[in-house]
Image (cartoon, rainbow, N blue to C red; front, top):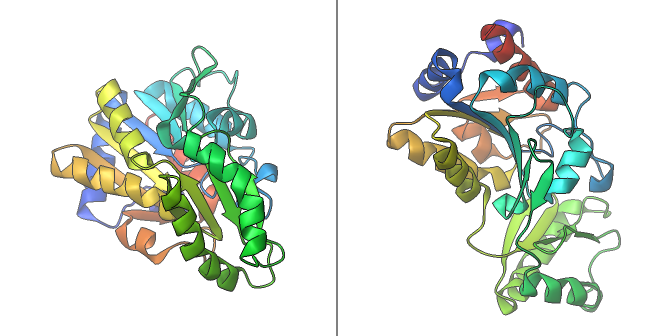
Length: 282
């Protein structure tokens, strides 16, 4: 995919959205997921790191925009650390909306704002090890503590990740209901977190805050569909928008690809897209 192709959405809405972003970048936001979008998917999420070119590409682009944002299920501080975003010249207009918007890191201050632990998440975190043992969870299943706002169960390391994932969906959904939580499925991961918080809610609120007229959103997994839905809703109300799929592996959900205006080959494609936008804006 060359520079010309990477700035060529295949839908009319995407073409209009890109044109609006390029015409008035000072009123536009580029928002991106982290894992699978800026950072390659790895077996151990604690080893995930943004591609070396990600922060420099964002720094090239950010000064021309209203803002750049990372919208992630990770704690905001973790995404900042794994992304290498702190102290990068040019990223003054950057925010990281962590825990699906429940936390926020602003580059200008370097501070993270957080609402504190959710009681349901605290209870589930304590209960999960015994719960998984009682239901005979497959060897290799493991728990990721995502701070006080979410906890996730991964099956990628099991002998049969798909079967383990399917076997866990309903038991974890029942556990979540008992603690007034919801389950968000992803690629070989089931995340338990409070309801009413998702990437779409976080993105919409931030776009209103900065008064954006255009947005480009890029993601790679089921959790990004809420952000896709928010952009589609805002397009219906007159905002320009571009939906980008980071399609780096065969695991990329079909629904994401079907709704995207543009698909790029994984995090490398996202970095190329950011650089192409910066080049187009001079």
